[in-house]
Image (cartoon, rainbow, N blue to C red; front, side):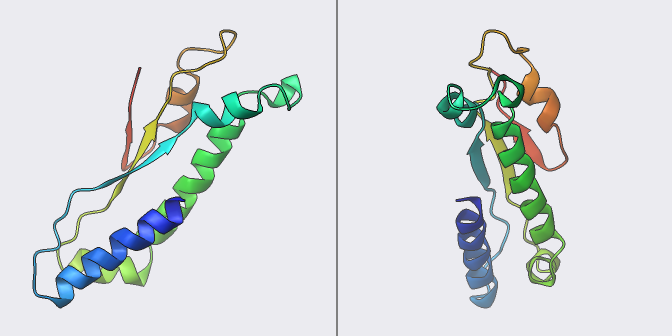
Length: 117
């Protein structure tokens, strides 16, 4: 879903640039983290609990950084565009046995926003 949101954001910025409008749009793409782990908690071995959300977030962040390093992004950035930020949502752990800051500590990264419960 993130890739579709990023593509829509990029198309919108490119259209603004082509129309001679300012490309300085503030935007976030929200990624809900703990919901992934809650959805599979009874279907994964104990050793894999509370890891799916982090894995999905890291994969999403890798795609995000690849986009920011692309020639396509550089063109709109040079025209004045601001990067869409990733917003890590639902970062409170649902597992009472997990650390309260499990997701927060694991997902601190440049150009991201974290909603702390």
